[in-house]
Length: 129
Image 1 (tube, helix red, strand yellow):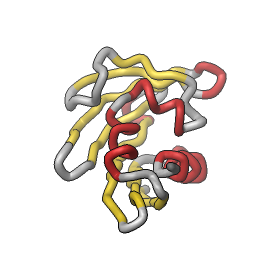
Image 2 (cartoon, rainbow, N blue to C red):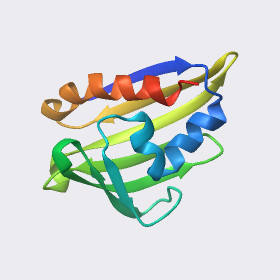
Image 3 (tube, one colour):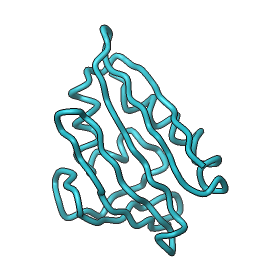
């Protein structure tokens, strides 16, 4: 299954982009993230980490692609086995009043459908001033 959601807000696009690029900031705008274990200070392709979700459940991830100029990035996140994961592509664009961010989620519908409302709320926080 694949679906795309988006959100707009008053935060400048550069601010929203930096919130994505620095994993230590993820828990400040994504309430489903309790913490991130990632060796780099900024996202880089072909690197790995762990997101700690609610109740401390670890979710492994790999950063697949980062396009700083186009402000898009893609990662694969999985719990237990890589084949039971989601591929997520994020983007940020400037708007006249701030930024628009979007997320395309691909994976099994049993994982995509419950994740969409959580992700929508997080995207709204990402672009909040």
